[in-house]
Length: 224
Image (cartoon, rainbow, N blue to C red; front, side, top):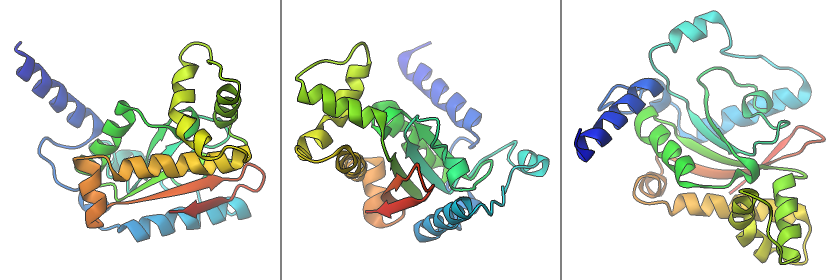
């Protein structure tokens, strides 16, 4: 198989396996949800989570059947891999509502960006949330490693390097300030990510917001 044919074959398999036909436009369900509406849904869900009034929407057999052939998540959440911060739980959402990407320190890499591009371009997601959280171990480790002019073991060093711009911009401040700076740094990088995300965001079709999850209260604070 020639290289170009191989790339086309891979793309076709990816699109079909993730639930969008080849050449698909914005799915109608996601297209009906504006970025502002998407953010409101997340805020409402988080309020229910904090108040212990969960609705557990879209989690039954009917929802599974509905989404068996396609998906149209209205929002993308890039969160930390921390086991206490599952987006579907803290936003009281269900199957097919969110396109979730998780990595320690909620940092970016080409695979993360490519996944977001896919969700925006083929699934119609309208909102991207970069979600940090209180007492983030990855941020703490990055601050300590940079302060000591050291190197983290193994591939953990890649996380340190990704978080370092936030560490450098918050010298003398605590880890919570660095956590917020890291979220803002990632959000800014997404807004500048050409050609797919930058254009969608600039046109207003897609919005990027940052957020911080409080481990103690369960509340999410959103910020641009």
